[in-house]
Length: 289
Length: 262
Image (cartoon, rainbow over all chains, first blue to last red; front, top):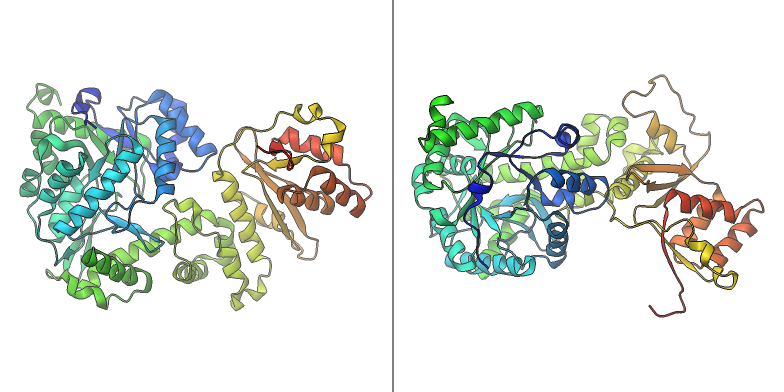
């Protein structure tokens, strides 16, 4: 399996995470959106949701972003879930398929969260095995996204970005660099976000995520919560500039899930990302922006 | 795989039961106690599932009021954690759970309203299937007609209640007349729920014998037997009209003969 490296030439502008509340408006008005990403699990049934996604696909490139494969679980990926994802891929023919470096299923229970794994040799063996199973089953490479961390597991011996690089090398997967998650993780676990980005193997990065986070008080300090409920924070924009310089080939995508604004506002935020992208590369567009 | 397995088992317990003690040593405090860090994940789990239940059961939530629904949802989540990563599949046991809540004796219709909302949710997300063309059954010869086993569309659901749950549901929709009163003694409901040709979820009321007829078809009873039983139960049962209605509505997806090998 070879991983295409030229996504940014295909999607030179920032796409948006497309949520159910905006589907009707997008179908009716067909706005100029570079590309869209949807959560795969929301379209694993039939009926209207799937019909709508097929109609969206007629006008836009669609990326399928999974949250339920639980590739960080010590257990192997659920074959039934892989089949549902494969069926959806067959129907939608997505431009990208992505998942997370996290786990959510264990012992038959789905914990509906992206839970952390310790970054160890043992975990690397398990996740590389699971990613390989998934890619073989889906017959395509997938992108693996760095999660938001709220805690650091004592057992970890490998820095997260290095772990992702090793995973990409071992399994042939690409990486989805969520810049907001980098900021959240580093703020919550005393890391340096620029060092984090510098440690990621640039050639493996096939997509960048942007989103807003909440800043919550906790025990006399603050915890950043990756809630996708606000505009992109200034700290994340700054980090995005750094990411663009390192991964100029990776297309960006804006996620907004909670307190969802009007579609026009979402597209404005995506346009800000385009301006930041141009500025980071020092292109002439910068002067105009 | 010892280490990761033990850790995931401990974290699972921390999230499901709130008992995070076993995981504390696995987490570096870094200025915030491990229990507090784990609570971020436990809260996310509980809040997102609670939102999923409220989205699937909006009328139940409205009838109970926000604080009461939140409390019951919390207990249900604790008793019935999800098994599927698709959240539209979460919460099928909620009506059964409500059956046994003593606090709800004054709202005896509430579990049935939950059954209706679950059926609507299942119908909305059920797998796609082409409807049987209305002319398909006309091709069957008389001798085969009684033997045929009909397959209902994957979206079709049958819901029955001794309360007027369809009217209760309608009067609790946004924009409904808040002055409407419903007598709980005005009679029960039997409903067929399914998706129409535009994939909108619709329902239609059924007579007792129509309901039994459809339940028999759903259970794989050959058409002749189901028809005969419905006619015996109610002499006015018009099987031909019922069948053509089902065909026209797209409720039938396929047919087969039980004796022939596929």
